[in-house]
Image (spheres, rainbow, N blue to C red):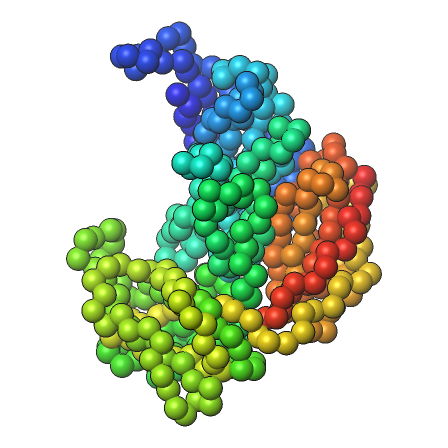
Amino acid sequence: MYNGSSNKYPLYGVELNRKTFEPIGGRVEMYLLEPERYGWQRFGEYLDNTFLDPFIEGAWMTKHNGKYYFQYGAPGTEFSGYGDGVVVGDKPLGNNFIPQSDPLSYKPGGFARGAGHGSTFQDNDSNYWHISTIAISVKNNFERRLGIWPAGFDKDDVMYMDAAFGDYPHYLPNGIDHSKSGFTGWMLLNYKTPVSVSSTLGGYHANNAVDENIKTYWSAASGNKGEWIQTELNTLSTVKAIQINYADQDAAFLGKQTNIYHQYKLYYSVDGKKWNILVDKSNNKTDVPHDYIELEKPVQAKFLKLENVHMPTGKFASSGFRVFGNGNGAKPDCVKQFIVLRTEKDKRSAWLKWRPVDNAIGYNIYTGIAPDKLYNCIMVYDVNEYYDKAMDKNKSYYFSIEAFNENGVSKRTAAIKVD
């Protein structure tokens, strides 16, 4: 059994009697964070808050090929950089573990950010998955959601997790090896596109529903039937899926209940004048705070409208009215002039910069300890630079980058090595 949550003490382990669950011997120390070496373990959102001690928590053990992979979460629930690390040893107890992936589970960018305090398991087809918590921390510091990510072990027994396009639609593995990406290739069609709404509450502006940030949201002035939000795509596009992410505004209760549900209607149009019903959940009786609808048959649309029928509590509000498919246009050009500057003074961090791609809305930065082990992916929008604070100061790293838009993904750049 493993336990612990502290910014001062390590995680612990103890052997248990399998019949009585009584301890056999005393507990032993497992692992304590080393933020002076591992950049991602530093407490804070982006910068190095050396005066605050990071928290270690979320102990989890996975055995693979006779080795023990001890996983842990750090540095704090509230941050986009909340992730899981892993240390590897040949015994299940003790502090003789060697750090491996730094970090293992990491998703500091995109719509849903953070991938910490997790656990690893296998499905019925022996595929590994890592489930971990996503930071919201708006209504409460510990407000979170759960994300599930493909995971596994490579030919060198290095444990990895794949967060690339992790909050975009993916295929289920259906019995195949999911070490090959299950990403559908359906792109986000309405990033920062025009939005119209029935009403707005205070500063909870309409564009917050399409800014790819789960922490911000639009709210209508009420939770009444008939309140609506409309998103306009850049061009007539092939729509294949929609994700409706509700936000809690003026909720009248706390905690999970069995009698709460959302009801809505979803419409589409090619001209914004003539509307067709796309999805009708007027009779839904389930709680769907992050409802995902995959269309049996894609539709051609330029406008989509979400109309409220019933809210379980509070105002009609959304942190992400997300439309996926293909924009029927050109993919972005490849990224050029990609540079990585790693300082001599603090090798835990690096500054990345590249020439903007005119027809891109965002970029995926891949990084890892070898050209074929670029297991961490950082998704960014609207920028052509990034401050990476996640490195082990004692290791060399490789970086690659790709651009994406509503039509697809560019080719990745060749991996750059930085010492």
